[in-house]
Each structure stands twice: as structure tokens, then as C-alpha cells.
Length: 540
Image 1 (cartoon, rainbow, N blue to C red):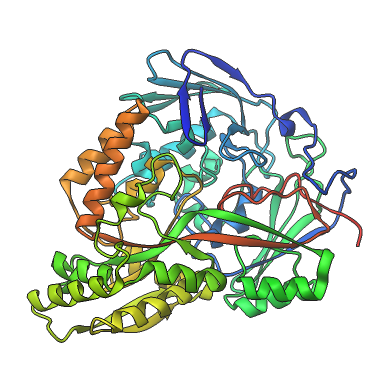
Image 2: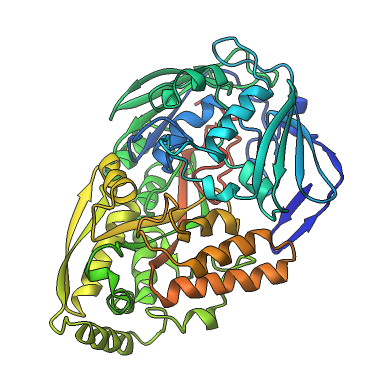
């Protein structure tokens, strides 16, 4: 079993781990300030800042899909809702890792039913992970495929056992298996149509799909046959969809929504608190994510490393952190992994790369020199595509455009609806430059760094570097933390010195909710802890 804590990792093999977790045992964990007896009933009303491009949680990478459908699904294992980054079971009751690290064997609960009444067995878990790990060339896409490179096969020797066999030991497999994106689907629907879940919801989670009006609302209702006794407490949940920050904030103020799971700017938070006082709770958390920029290396402009470096040099990230923290929660300057975490690049090393030195005027002078050397002494014009969500996408873009103007680069800001943004960025490469966050459900390096590999669906810049590919594979296989750290530093160095991706600022967030929303603990991202099985509503 791999236990993970901040700053260290221990690998214990050949051990069977019985999962004594509150949810499985039927006990309730109550957070501070919510130590009352849980109340049954009520509909949790929530606001969300984008509509889902599709409902298939395996194919998508946006909160707009995950938050809507996660309460309808179960996963094999999961991040502990009350103890990030600890991993606990969901469908799995226990697991064993072979002494050589080449087999992970999970035992499954035998009392789980999908919402259509059919039993959940290892055949469904195998079909689910086969879709994620071994997607066919013709699709559907699997954006997390590269995180499972060590997996050689997935076997279901009996109805309650699932075995992952590896080509080599992996430092991160358990973290990847615990991803909230790994919803378990019924095999029979996948056999009928691998794309079935792009437009349908059928899981075994605490809630069942009720209704969806695109661009307006999404609703789930209580699953009375949920495998955890007496859960969920809620009768259901309902999301109101709006890309307008002011609309979502107004919904919280009026009580039309009780929670916004992703983020609201500090100014709106302050206004809500001023009006409602102790009726409102704010959970302020770091984010396992940042907002940056992808440059399309297939475009003539950005095939030249000098131009890419110039655009990075043209952004004063330290001033940006001061200006954008109160507006968008964008605050900390860092490389490709969250500052202050185990594998993050040290600040002294970071400041050696284009755009990360602290002398902004010196950086801009070097940017202009590189542009002139590349044949653009007077700068150039570029279209910066973006998602039509203010926080933090558009706030970040406005700052970048102002910064680039100082080195002679004029950027036209072109916001797109979520589905169109994914289509132009991820699917078609139809952009010159595009705002691109890197946000994941944990700090694990495999999960964050796979996007810099050749052909990864999250490699929006379309670059290919065999050195990076090799470093990614080697760090994924390194079980010695010190050796892995060296390889990860080399990989980050290669990305930054070539400006393949331009990291922006690391994000913090405000989870704002009415005090009557009990037993919800905000993790350091807006993906984990979204099943809502333990959440309940107190009396007004």
C-alpha cells in the first residue's frame, strides 16, 4: 500500500490493507462547526460557472462536467474527503500490492447496484479502466491515458476481484487510480456504445440523474439503494449554470444557491459576508493548479523558441501575483508543480528561466532583443483565445495582454464558450496562443507532467521533445524519492528553457457557502470531494 503525506512517501508492498473508513462502516465524520445530528432531506442548491462540453467524465477535463455528474458515480478508490491526500476505498474494500510492485489486487464490495438495478462487478471495473488506460485509436479519447503507462493488463479473475498488472513498478499508480475522473460505468452500456456516456448518466453513486437543461440547470436525486447505509442525507442537488461571476455571487446572496464549489473573487466574498454575516462560511484553500498559456508550436510564429521565450519574458509574474490575487486568486509564482510541495522547483532555480527573473525591465529588454533577432523588431499581432469565464481566465488574459503590449506584441482577446474553447485548443489546435490552466485532483507529478509528453491530449501546444518523453517515463518508474526529484527537476528545466508552455500563477480559491451546508470540507482543488454523500442541510 502506498501511503502519501506532504513531503514524504513510503512504499509498503506485500501488505493487505483493510479500509476502515467512516463512509463504509456507516459512521459519520462531522467537521468543525457541524457537530449536530445530521438532518435528512432538502435539495443542495449550487452555482457553477460553465456548462459541460460533454457528460463523459472519462473524456473531459473540466470542473463543468465533473461537478455535475460526480455525485452519480462511484470510483474504485478515492482521496479521503476529510484528509487530502490520503487514499481510501470506495468500491474497493481492501487492496494488496505484490512484493515486486508489479501487481495491485483490489477486493470489491458485493452489494453495489447501478441505478438501473444491475449489480456492479469486477467486469464493470475492468471495462471502465480498459476504456481509460487502453482507448482504441478511433476513440473515445482518454486525456489521462499517459498516467497509466506502467499498466500492462487489467484482469477480473472473479466477480469481486480486479488486478492491475504492471510492466514496471510505479510511484504513482495508486494516486492515479484514485482520480475522481475514474467513474465506474456499467460494461453493458460501454459494449453497446463507447460514447454512450457523453450524453447519458448511469452510475452507482449516492445520487441518480434527474434532469439536465443545457446552459441552465442540472439535477440529481437521492439514490435510495446506495451501498452505504443511510446515505446520502440530501434528497437531491441542483446546479444553476452561469458564466457570469456576478450572477453566481448574486445567487449566493439571495439564497438561490447555497454554495459555489469552485471560486469567487475576494471582492464578491467580502460583499456577501458583509450582507449575510455568520450565515455565510468561506473556506479559503490553495489550488493544485495554475493558469498559464499554451503556444501552438505548429504555427510559424511559435515554432521559433526565441519568440516563445520573448513572450514569457514579457510577463511580470511577480507584479501579476500582487495585482491578481484579490481579483482572481492568482497569487504564487512557480514552475510546473505547486510551490512548496515535495517535487516543486526551488525558487533559486526558477529565477534562472525566461520570465521568472525579478528584474522586469531587464526581462523586457531581453524580450525585445529576442524578437528583433527572430525578425520581429516591431513586434507582431497575435490572437489570444480564451474561455468565456472571468475567474480566473479572463482576468489573467487582460493582465497578459497589457504586459505583452510593453514588448510590442498586440494580442486580440477572443473568449470562447467552453465547448468551443476545448474544440479549438485540445481537439483541433486551431489557435496561435490560448489561455490554458493546469489543474489536477492531486499534486502527483505523473498527473501534472504527462501533458508535456508527445501526443498527450493535454499537450495543447503540440510540441514533441524526446528528452521530455524519456524523463517522464524515467521519473514515473523511480521509486527513490531523491532520484525521482532529480528527474522531475530536469523535466521542468527542459520545458521552461524551451518555453514549450508558459506557466502563469498558482491559484488559491474561496469556497463560499451558507452555514447551513454541513459536513463539506473543501480540498485543494475543485475536483475531489464532489460526491456529496455526507453533506446535509441544517434548518434555516
